[in-house]
Length: 112
Figure 1 (tube, rainbow, N blue to C red):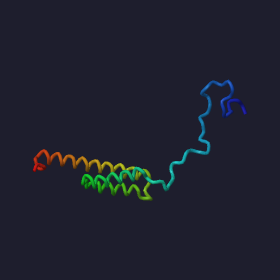
Figure 2: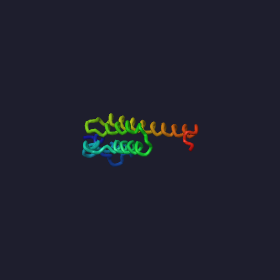
Figure 3: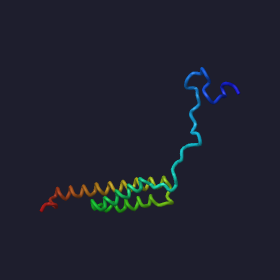
Figure 4: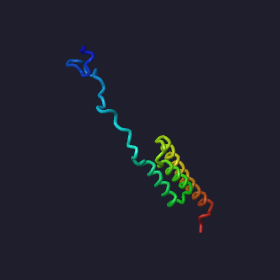
């Protein structure tokens, strides 16, 4: 075994010529299979809260999409897409509600 084949930095060698550190027993785990999907739960709660508090009808669609993301057999990439779309639908419903209230207020429909 020559000095160049040695896995550690030899004495007197210039700094920076050592191999990158290893992970020891392998790379860290990607995540347990039974771990709850926190983003999916948050999306579901926010959508249901928007239905109750803002009468956001589109929040029902967002809650359905978030519920689909929480199903056991859904791939993580597909669940991420469901969650993103559920949040987009929720925000679109809230914006539509704000625009409707501004329109009704501007045209005098909210006056007594």
